[in-house]
Image (cartoon, rainbow, N blue to C red):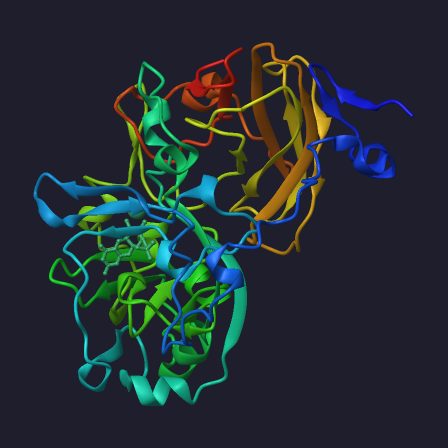
Length: 411
Ligand SMILES: Nc1nc2c(c(=O)[nH]1)N[C@H]1C(S)=C(S)[C@@H](COP(=O)(O)O)O[C@H]1N2
Ligand SMILES: [Mo]
Protein backbone atom coordinates (compact mmCIF):
# COMPACT_ATOMS: atom_id res chain seq x y z
CA UNK A 1 0.00 0.00 0.00
CA UNK A 2 1.24 3.49 -0.72
CA UNK A 3 0.90 6.56 1.45
CA UNK A 4 -2.08 8.67 0.62
CA UNK A 5 -1.43 12.42 0.36
CA UNK A 6 -3.99 14.90 1.70
CA UNK A 7 -2.31 18.12 0.48
CA UNK A 8 0.95 19.34 -1.04
CA UNK A 9 4.52 18.89 0.22
CA UNK A 10 3.96 15.73 2.23
CA UNK A 11 0.73 16.12 4.20
CA UNK A 12 -0.75 12.63 4.58
CA UNK A 13 -4.09 11.03 5.14
CA UNK A 14 -4.28 9.88 8.75
CA UNK A 15 -6.69 7.00 8.20
CA UNK A 16 -4.61 5.49 5.39
CA UNK A 17 -1.50 5.84 7.49
CA UNK A 18 -3.04 3.98 10.41
CA UNK A 19 -4.15 1.15 8.11
CA UNK A 20 -0.54 0.82 7.04
CA UNK A 21 0.43 -0.06 10.60
CA UNK A 22 4.15 0.39 11.04
CA UNK A 23 4.41 2.49 7.88
CA UNK A 24 5.57 5.47 9.91
CA UNK A 25 8.86 3.63 10.05
CA UNK A 26 10.33 5.63 12.91
CA UNK A 27 12.09 2.39 13.81
CA UNK A 28 11.35 0.02 16.66
CA UNK A 29 14.17 -0.42 19.14
CA UNK A 30 15.52 -3.92 18.64
CA UNK A 31 17.97 -4.24 21.52
CA UNK A 32 16.48 -4.63 25.04
CA UNK A 33 17.30 -2.11 27.76
CA UNK A 34 20.70 -2.92 29.24
CA UNK A 35 20.31 -4.97 32.44
CA UNK A 36 22.74 -2.81 34.38
CA UNK A 37 20.56 0.34 34.33
CA UNK A 38 20.32 1.46 38.00
CA UNK A 39 16.50 1.76 37.97
CA UNK A 40 16.27 -1.94 37.14
CA UNK A 41 18.39 -2.93 40.14
CA UNK A 42 17.47 -0.68 43.11
CA UNK A 43 14.17 0.53 44.60
CA UNK A 44 13.32 4.09 43.63
CA UNK A 45 12.38 7.19 45.64
CA UNK A 46 9.56 7.11 48.21
CA UNK A 47 6.18 8.70 47.60
CA UNK A 48 5.77 12.38 48.41
CA UNK A 49 3.29 14.89 49.86
CA UNK A 50 2.93 16.84 46.65
CA UNK A 51 4.19 15.43 43.36
CA UNK A 52 6.63 17.07 40.99
CA UNK A 53 7.24 16.49 37.28
CA UNK A 54 10.04 14.11 36.43
CA UNK A 55 13.30 15.98 36.83
CA UNK A 56 14.27 14.47 33.49
CA UNK A 57 11.39 16.18 31.68
CA UNK A 58 12.55 19.73 30.99
CA UNK A 59 9.46 21.72 31.94
CA UNK A 60 9.91 25.44 32.49
CA UNK A 61 7.85 28.48 31.74
CA UNK A 62 9.05 30.57 28.82
CA UNK A 63 9.80 34.27 28.69
CA UNK A 64 9.76 34.81 32.42
CA UNK A 65 9.76 38.57 31.92
CA UNK A 66 10.37 41.08 34.58
CA UNK A 67 8.73 44.33 33.61
CA UNK A 68 10.95 47.44 33.41
CA UNK A 69 8.83 48.90 36.23
CA UNK A 70 9.97 46.14 38.60
CA UNK A 71 10.13 42.35 38.90
CA UNK A 72 6.58 42.01 40.26
CA UNK A 73 5.02 43.42 37.09
CA UNK A 74 5.64 41.00 34.27
CA UNK A 75 4.61 37.80 32.62
CA UNK A 76 5.62 34.23 31.90
CA UNK A 77 4.40 31.95 29.12
CA UNK A 78 3.26 28.35 28.84
CA UNK A 79 5.89 26.23 27.00
CA UNK A 80 3.35 25.06 24.40
CA UNK A 81 5.96 23.01 22.53
CA UNK A 82 6.71 20.86 25.62
CA UNK A 83 3.07 19.89 26.24
CA UNK A 84 0.42 17.82 24.52
CA UNK A 85 -3.32 17.36 24.89
CA UNK A 86 -5.27 20.49 25.82
CA UNK A 87 -4.96 20.99 29.60
CA UNK A 88 -2.11 23.12 30.93
CA UNK A 89 -0.56 21.78 34.13
CA UNK A 90 -1.14 24.35 36.88
CA UNK A 91 2.60 24.85 37.39
CA UNK A 92 2.93 25.95 33.75
CA UNK A 93 -0.18 28.14 33.42
CA UNK A 94 0.93 31.45 31.94
CA UNK A 95 1.15 34.36 34.38
CA UNK A 96 0.52 38.05 33.97
CA UNK A 97 0.72 40.17 37.09
CA UNK A 98 0.62 43.94 37.32
CA UNK A 99 1.94 44.03 40.87
CA UNK A 100 3.13 40.55 41.73
CA UNK A 101 1.36 37.65 43.45
CA UNK A 102 -0.28 38.72 46.73
CA UNK A 103 -0.10 36.24 49.62
CA UNK A 104 -3.77 36.29 50.64
CA UNK A 105 -5.10 34.59 53.77
CA UNK A 106 -8.52 33.25 52.68
CA UNK A 107 -9.81 33.70 56.24
CA UNK A 108 -9.23 37.45 55.87
CA UNK A 109 -10.38 37.86 52.28
CA UNK A 110 -13.92 38.79 51.19
CA UNK A 111 -15.81 39.48 48.00
CA UNK A 112 -18.25 42.42 48.17
CA UNK A 113 -20.98 43.06 45.61
CA UNK A 114 -22.32 46.62 45.78
CA UNK A 115 -23.40 49.60 43.68
CA UNK A 116 -26.69 49.40 41.76
CA UNK A 117 -28.00 46.36 43.62
CA UNK A 118 -30.94 45.91 46.00
CA UNK A 119 -28.89 44.33 48.82
CA UNK A 120 -25.10 44.80 48.91
CA UNK A 121 -23.54 41.55 50.14
CA UNK A 122 -20.14 40.39 51.29
CA UNK A 123 -19.11 36.75 50.85
CA UNK A 124 -16.21 35.04 52.52
CA UNK A 125 -14.36 31.98 51.20
CA UNK A 126 -16.24 29.52 53.39
CA UNK A 127 -19.60 30.92 52.26
CA UNK A 128 -18.67 30.67 48.58
CA UNK A 129 -17.64 27.02 48.99
CA UNK A 130 -21.25 26.19 49.91
CA UNK A 131 -22.75 27.49 46.66
CA UNK A 132 -23.54 25.15 43.75
CA UNK A 133 -20.50 25.02 41.49
CA UNK A 134 -19.80 24.46 37.84
CA UNK A 135 -16.74 22.93 36.09
CA UNK A 136 -15.73 23.96 32.60
CA UNK A 137 -12.69 23.39 30.41
CA UNK A 138 -11.82 26.86 29.09
CA UNK A 139 -8.92 28.66 27.51
CA UNK A 140 -7.56 31.87 28.99
CA UNK A 141 -5.58 34.10 26.63
CA UNK A 142 -3.93 37.46 27.26
CA UNK A 143 -4.90 39.92 24.53
CA UNK A 144 -1.17 40.64 24.19
CA UNK A 145 -0.46 37.05 23.18
CA UNK A 146 1.70 36.68 20.03
CA UNK A 147 2.40 40.43 19.98
CA UNK A 148 5.94 39.86 18.66
CA UNK A 149 4.39 38.67 15.39
CA UNK A 150 3.07 42.21 14.84
CA UNK A 151 6.68 43.50 14.74
CA UNK A 152 8.33 44.21 11.32
CA UNK A 153 10.84 41.33 11.59
CA UNK A 154 9.97 37.76 12.58
CA UNK A 155 11.56 36.84 15.94
CA UNK A 156 13.34 33.47 16.20
CA UNK A 157 11.41 32.05 19.15
CA UNK A 158 9.72 28.87 20.32
CA UNK A 159 5.95 28.35 20.09
CA UNK A 160 5.68 29.12 23.79
CA UNK A 161 7.89 32.21 23.75
CA UNK A 162 5.82 33.65 20.90
CA UNK A 163 2.34 32.38 21.62
CA UNK A 164 2.34 31.02 25.17
CA UNK A 165 0.20 33.70 26.82
CA UNK A 166 -2.61 31.15 26.46
CA UNK A 167 -3.36 28.26 28.79
CA UNK A 168 -6.27 25.95 29.40
CA UNK A 169 -7.66 24.53 32.62
CA UNK A 170 -10.74 22.88 33.98
CA UNK A 171 -12.03 25.75 36.12
CA UNK A 172 -14.52 25.13 38.92
CA UNK A 173 -16.41 27.87 40.66
CA UNK A 174 -19.69 29.59 41.41
CA UNK A 175 -21.62 30.92 38.40
CA UNK A 176 -21.62 34.68 38.97
CA UNK A 177 -25.33 35.04 38.24
CA UNK A 178 -26.15 33.10 41.43
CA UNK A 179 -24.44 35.80 43.50
CA UNK A 180 -25.83 38.68 41.44
CA UNK A 181 -29.36 37.32 41.75
CA UNK A 182 -28.93 37.21 45.50
CA UNK A 183 -27.91 40.87 45.65
CA UNK A 184 -30.62 41.82 43.16
CA UNK A 185 -29.63 43.67 39.98
CA UNK A 186 -31.23 47.10 39.63
CA UNK A 187 -32.72 47.63 36.14
CA UNK A 188 -30.45 50.58 35.30
CA UNK A 189 -27.23 48.67 35.93
CA UNK A 190 -25.35 47.74 32.77
CA UNK A 191 -21.74 47.15 33.84
CA UNK A 192 -19.92 45.29 36.60
CA UNK A 193 -16.64 46.82 37.74
CA UNK A 194 -14.42 44.02 39.05
CA UNK A 195 -11.44 44.80 41.29
CA UNK A 196 -8.59 42.63 42.59
CA UNK A 197 -6.94 42.58 46.00
CA UNK A 198 -3.42 42.97 44.60
CA UNK A 199 -1.47 46.17 45.25
CA UNK A 200 -2.36 47.53 41.78
CA UNK A 201 -6.08 46.93 42.51
CA UNK A 202 -6.34 45.76 38.93
CA UNK A 203 -9.84 46.60 37.73
CA UNK A 204 -11.99 46.22 34.65
CA UNK A 205 -15.54 47.02 33.53
CA UNK A 206 -17.42 43.90 32.41
CA UNK A 207 -20.67 44.29 30.45
CA UNK A 208 -23.53 42.97 32.60
CA UNK A 209 -24.54 40.52 29.86
CA UNK A 210 -21.11 38.84 30.01
CA UNK A 211 -21.17 38.84 33.80
CA UNK A 212 -24.56 37.13 34.00
CA UNK A 213 -24.29 34.73 31.05
CA UNK A 214 -21.06 32.81 31.50
CA UNK A 215 -18.80 34.41 34.10
CA UNK A 216 -17.89 32.52 37.26
CA UNK A 217 -16.05 33.14 40.47
CA UNK A 218 -13.42 30.43 40.02
CA UNK A 219 -12.12 28.68 43.13
CA UNK A 220 -10.50 25.52 41.71
CA UNK A 221 -8.08 25.04 38.82
CA UNK A 222 -7.65 21.52 37.40
CA UNK A 223 -9.16 20.08 40.56
CA UNK A 224 -7.05 21.86 43.18
CA UNK A 225 -7.54 25.27 44.80
CA UNK A 226 -6.37 28.08 42.50
CA UNK A 227 -2.65 28.63 42.40
CA UNK A 228 -1.48 31.90 43.98
CA UNK A 229 -0.41 33.08 40.53
CA UNK A 230 -3.90 32.40 39.16
CA UNK A 231 -5.77 34.35 41.86
CA UNK A 232 -6.00 32.30 45.07
CA UNK A 233 -8.40 32.24 46.82
CA UNK A 234 -10.83 33.40 44.10
CA UNK A 235 -10.83 35.02 40.68
CA UNK A 236 -13.33 36.25 38.17
CA UNK A 237 -13.38 34.19 34.99
CA UNK A 238 -15.01 35.68 31.89
CA UNK A 239 -14.82 32.82 29.36
CA UNK A 240 -13.72 33.56 25.79
CA UNK A 241 -12.70 37.13 26.58
CA UNK A 242 -9.30 38.79 26.88
CA UNK A 243 -7.51 37.57 30.00
CA UNK A 244 -7.40 41.02 31.54
CA UNK A 245 -11.16 40.82 32.30
CA UNK A 246 -10.63 37.76 34.48
CA UNK A 247 -9.66 39.71 37.59
CA UNK A 248 -7.54 37.63 39.99
CA UNK A 249 -7.71 37.84 43.80
CA UNK A 250 -11.24 39.19 43.25
CA UNK A 251 -12.39 41.43 46.12
CA UNK A 252 -15.26 43.54 44.77
CA UNK A 253 -17.87 43.82 42.06
CA UNK A 254 -19.59 47.17 41.68
CA UNK A 255 -22.67 47.40 39.49
CA UNK A 256 -22.92 50.64 37.52
CA UNK A 257 -24.93 52.09 34.65
CA UNK A 258 -21.71 52.85 32.72
CA UNK A 259 -18.14 51.54 32.45
CA UNK A 260 -15.56 52.94 34.87
CA UNK A 261 -13.01 53.69 32.09
CA UNK A 262 -10.15 52.35 34.19
CA UNK A 263 -6.50 52.47 33.12
CA UNK A 264 -6.84 48.91 31.81
CA UNK A 265 -9.55 49.91 29.32
CA UNK A 266 -8.25 53.31 28.21
CA UNK A 267 -4.47 53.68 28.06
CA UNK A 268 -4.06 49.85 27.94
CA UNK A 269 -6.01 47.02 26.28
CA UNK A 270 -7.56 49.21 23.59
CA UNK A 271 -6.92 48.65 19.88
CA UNK A 272 -5.35 51.61 18.13
CA UNK A 273 -6.29 51.70 14.44
CA UNK A 274 -4.26 53.14 11.55
CA UNK A 275 -6.60 56.18 11.38
CA UNK A 276 -5.66 57.13 14.95
CA UNK A 277 -8.97 56.03 16.50
CA UNK A 278 -8.79 53.42 19.25
CA UNK A 279 -11.39 50.70 19.65
CA UNK A 280 -12.48 50.13 23.23
CA UNK A 281 -14.02 47.00 24.78
CA UNK A 282 -13.12 44.59 21.96
CA UNK A 283 -13.36 41.82 24.50
CA UNK A 284 -13.81 38.49 22.68
CA UNK A 285 -10.67 36.63 21.66
CA UNK A 286 -10.89 35.73 17.97
CA UNK A 287 -10.40 32.33 16.31
CA UNK A 288 -6.76 31.20 16.42
CA UNK A 289 -4.52 28.16 16.12
CA UNK A 290 -0.85 27.38 16.65
CA UNK A 291 1.20 24.39 15.50
CA UNK A 292 3.05 23.42 18.66
CA UNK A 293 5.08 20.60 17.13
CA UNK A 294 7.14 20.73 15.00
CA UNK A 295 7.70 24.39 15.89
CA UNK A 296 10.17 27.22 16.39
CA UNK A 297 13.76 26.41 17.47
CA UNK A 298 13.18 22.65 17.09
CA UNK A 299 15.36 20.62 14.72
CA UNK A 300 14.11 17.64 12.71
CA UNK A 301 16.86 15.03 12.85
CA UNK A 302 16.04 13.10 9.68
CA UNK A 303 13.63 12.81 6.76
CA UNK A 304 10.47 10.82 7.44
CA UNK A 305 7.01 10.95 8.90
CA UNK A 306 6.20 13.39 11.72
CA UNK A 307 2.91 14.25 13.38
CA UNK A 308 2.03 17.93 13.02
CA UNK A 309 0.01 18.87 16.08
CA UNK A 310 -1.26 21.99 17.75
CA UNK A 311 -3.97 23.89 19.58
CA UNK A 312 -6.96 25.83 18.27
CA UNK A 313 -9.52 27.95 20.13
CA UNK A 314 -12.06 30.72 19.63
CA UNK A 315 -13.81 33.17 21.92
CA UNK A 316 -16.83 32.99 19.60
CA UNK A 317 -17.88 29.40 20.22
CA UNK A 318 -16.32 26.09 19.26
CA UNK A 319 -13.67 25.11 16.76
CA UNK A 320 -15.28 23.53 13.71
CA UNK A 321 -12.28 22.77 11.48
CA UNK A 322 -8.51 23.12 11.51
CA UNK A 323 -6.62 23.01 8.23
CA UNK A 324 -2.89 22.54 7.86
CA UNK A 325 -0.56 23.53 5.03
CA UNK A 326 3.02 22.36 4.45
CA UNK A 327 3.59 24.56 1.40
CA UNK A 328 3.04 28.04 2.79
CA UNK A 329 -0.70 28.12 2.18
CA UNK A 330 -0.84 26.87 -1.44
CA UNK A 331 -2.74 23.74 -0.44
CA UNK A 332 -4.55 22.79 2.75
CA UNK A 333 -5.63 19.51 4.35
CA UNK A 334 -8.12 19.07 7.15
CA UNK A 335 -6.47 17.95 10.38
CA UNK A 336 -8.09 15.55 12.80
CA UNK A 337 -9.56 17.23 15.88
CA UNK A 338 -8.46 14.67 18.39
CA UNK A 339 -9.75 15.87 21.76
CA UNK A 340 -13.04 16.80 23.38
CA UNK A 341 -14.83 19.79 21.97
CA UNK A 342 -17.07 22.29 23.69
CA UNK A 343 -17.92 25.93 23.86
CA UNK A 344 -14.80 28.04 24.48
CA UNK A 345 -12.77 24.87 24.92
CA UNK A 346 -9.49 24.57 23.00
CA UNK A 347 -8.93 21.52 20.79
CA UNK A 348 -5.88 19.47 19.90
CA UNK A 349 -5.45 18.89 16.16
CA UNK A 350 -3.17 16.35 14.47
CA UNK A 351 -2.12 15.38 10.95
CA UNK A 352 0.74 13.19 9.68
CA UNK A 353 3.37 14.72 7.42
CA UNK A 354 6.29 13.24 5.53
CA UNK A 355 9.28 15.57 5.49
CA UNK A 356 11.31 15.00 2.34
CA UNK A 357 14.34 16.95 3.56
CA UNK A 358 13.44 20.04 1.52
CA UNK A 359 12.38 23.43 2.92
CA UNK A 360 8.72 23.51 3.99
CA UNK A 361 6.46 26.19 5.47
CA UNK A 362 4.04 24.77 8.06
CA UNK A 363 0.84 26.67 8.86
CA UNK A 364 -2.49 26.01 10.54
CA UNK A 365 -5.79 27.82 10.03
CA UNK A 366 -8.78 27.40 12.33
CA UNK A 367 -12.46 27.98 11.55
CA UNK A 368 -14.99 28.41 14.36
CA UNK A 369 -18.67 27.55 14.64
CA UNK A 370 -19.57 31.23 14.23
CA UNK A 371 -18.05 30.97 10.72
CA UNK A 372 -14.87 32.98 11.40
CA UNK A 373 -11.69 31.88 9.61
CA UNK A 374 -8.31 32.66 11.15
CA UNK A 375 -6.76 35.46 9.04
CA UNK A 376 -3.33 35.60 7.45
CA UNK A 377 -0.82 37.89 9.15
CA UNK A 378 -1.44 40.52 6.48
CA UNK A 379 -5.21 40.37 6.95
CA UNK A 380 -4.87 40.43 10.74
CA UNK A 381 -2.74 43.61 10.69
CA UNK A 382 -4.81 45.43 8.06
CA UNK A 383 -6.17 48.76 9.29
CA UNK A 384 -4.35 48.52 12.62
CA UNK A 385 -1.81 51.01 13.85
CA UNK A 386 1.73 49.56 13.72
CA UNK A 387 1.83 50.39 17.42
CA UNK A 388 -1.02 48.00 18.20
CA UNK A 389 -0.09 44.77 19.91
CA UNK A 390 -3.39 43.36 21.20
CA UNK A 391 -5.74 40.71 19.77
CA UNK A 392 -3.30 39.44 17.11
CA UNK A 393 -4.61 36.15 15.70
CA UNK A 394 -2.83 35.84 12.34
CA UNK A 395 -1.72 32.46 10.97
CA UNK A 396 1.62 31.33 12.48
CA UNK A 397 4.18 30.15 9.91
CA UNK A 398 7.07 27.84 10.80
CA UNK A 399 9.85 27.48 8.22
CA UNK A 400 11.59 24.10 8.14
CA UNK A 401 15.06 24.55 6.59
CA UNK A 402 16.81 21.74 4.69
CA UNK A 403 18.95 21.29 7.82
CA UNK A 404 15.79 20.51 9.79
CA UNK A 405 16.04 23.72 11.86
CA UNK A 406 12.67 25.46 12.34
CA UNK A 407 12.18 29.21 12.57
CA UNK A 408 9.34 31.71 12.84
CA UNK A 409 8.74 33.40 9.47
CA UNK A 410 6.24 35.78 7.91
CA UNK A 411 4.91 33.92 4.87
N1 LIG B 1 -5.96 41.40 40.10
C1 LIG B 1 -5.39 41.17 38.91
N2 LIG B 1 -6.07 40.48 37.99
C2 LIG B 1 -5.52 40.23 36.78
C3 LIG B 1 -4.23 40.73 36.45
C4 LIG B 1 -3.52 41.43 37.46
O1 LIG B 1 -2.37 41.86 37.29
N3 LIG B 1 -4.13 41.64 38.67
N4 LIG B 1 -3.72 40.49 35.19
C5 LIG B 1 -4.71 40.28 34.13
C6 LIG B 1 -4.17 39.87 32.86
S1 LIG B 1 -3.54 41.10 31.88
C7 LIG B 1 -4.30 38.59 32.40
S2 LIG B 1 -3.85 38.18 30.82
C8 LIG B 1 -4.79 37.51 33.27
C9 LIG B 1 -3.71 36.45 33.43
O2 LIG B 1 -4.16 35.40 34.23
P1 LIG B 1 -3.11 34.31 34.73
O3 LIG B 1 -1.95 35.02 35.34
O4 LIG B 1 -3.85 33.43 35.66
O5 LIG B 1 -2.67 33.55 33.50
O6 LIG B 1 -5.17 37.97 34.55
C10 LIG B 1 -5.76 39.24 34.57
N5 LIG B 1 -6.23 39.51 35.89
MO1 LIG C 1 -3.24 40.24 29.73
